[in-house]
Length: 119
Image 1 (spheres, rainbow, N blue to C red):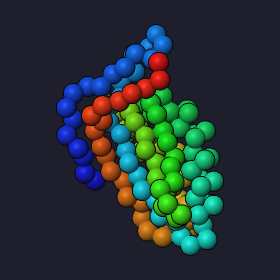
Image 2 (image 1 turned 135 degrees about the horizontal axis):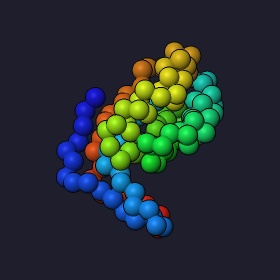
Image 3 (image 1 turned 90 degrees about the horizontal axis):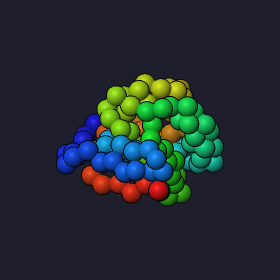
């Protein structure tokens, strides 16, 4: 897993709270032929799980092409990122990867350089 250089802590005030977003994960998933809808449903089901993860600041399930999907999520620090990597979504992905994906997921650890969050 690679990482981009971190230029400094990134924070933004959202409402009355200051939200720190400094690190993230970029995950690329390639669905097996005929499993595209199943991958989309799997990713949609992950939202409920990550809502219970206090260290996950933002989480996005994305579609990059007909059979290419991704996850992009952000964290205040590496502890939150590691907790997520050891959490339920990662475990479920590991359990379902052979049935849904044509190749192992590509997981990149990234550092957030700039962020805009809703106020």
